[in-house]
Image 1 (cartoon, rainbow, N blue to C red):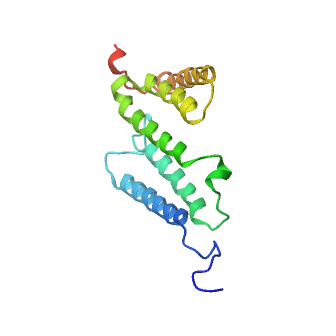
Image 2 (spheres, one colour; image 1 turned 60 degrees about the horizontal axis):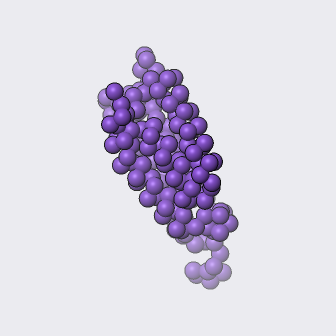
Image 3 (tube, helix red, strand yellow; image 1 turned 135 degrees about the horizontal axis):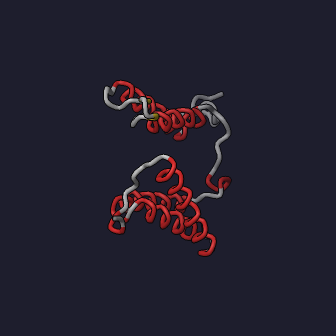
Length: 158
């Protein structure tokens, strides 16, 4: 085979580079968490403040391997995704990050789910509203009632 041939296994693709970057990022996060003296993984009351970042970094590390390992590459068309849809989703995630502390966690999550389903996925409003409300109730039950997490209430909280 010629140098710089078209064999996908021999090329250093953008996906592979991105996978390596994600693996390095997750390893740096794991190393930084383990070197912290005040962010404990587990204490006498259960999971500590570094538990979720450890879990998410581990998941990111495992998923980055799928980008690094040579395989047949999937195109946007095969996934049913489009670059404009991806840009819309990124805009919505940034809006969620801004709105979460401003209008409250549960309201911003509900709005995010509804707008994402209508604007990005082109679903009907009735399905989006039902899904948004159900997902908000599930988040409230898990985080507020079961885990006792104080979500930002925004201006509507007491």
